[in-house]
Image (cartoon, rainbow, N blue to C red; front, top):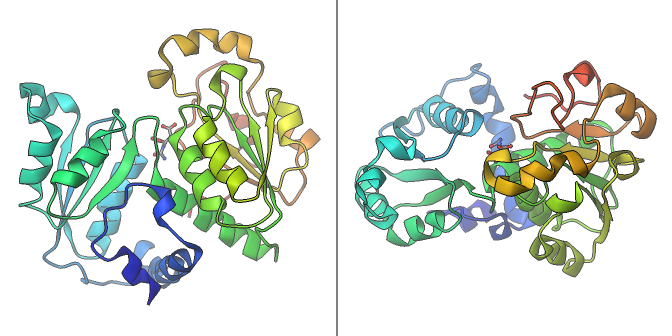
Length: 302
Ligand code: NCD
């Protein structure tokens, strides 16, 4: 059984997955869907403890790990924010991870520094899951995103192979984009349409991965051109907290506010519109506009 490929493994990057592993994982996810929705009950993780270490802001990822573990009968032990942890006292992440791995069966960590997840995994005696490492990766979000794409394409009887995937917004710091490119690269003959302000382009490393897997890459800095005719539109927030000085240039970056009018003008009726959330809903934000919230092309959250 291919799921064995994941048994007791750290989950640090989306490049750890193969299509067969994903098929097995998604079959399990389908089977557990009634449990996730609260319609069935299981205690399969009774007695197990998840250590949840979110040193960087999180709502969805942190709570979804909690909910998943608890719905399966396990218990969760937390720390949130560097300021409430012993890292404030000068402790190394290796010491933290090593000790916590004595309390828990698995650990999920989010930290603004990309390397912390790797140092933690090296020190831990139990599997470590990457809940987002700075501007690096977010492998579990990409697992969910691919699950959504697969489900939405299946409803329309369409194949992912050959699809035109518009990746929009902050492709430089958007870690969900980086992990999603890696997973989608397992398919064939895709066109990744990378559409961002010119100072927030996707790092070459991820472009190389897609190109080496035989996919086409288009780069655009104009939103309307980038989303034209796409089969998937994956929009992201500008990561202001990472961008530092870059964010100041945003006004020169063009119009990245994705409105209903732009979706209507440029995206086909079958297009699957996605966003990993959070989106920036402030006035003037360069993000998916809430005026498109009733658009049937928005992939449902559950
Ligand atoms: C993202 C993240 O934290 O990387 N959100 C998420 O986990 N679903 C995206 C973001 O912060 O913009």
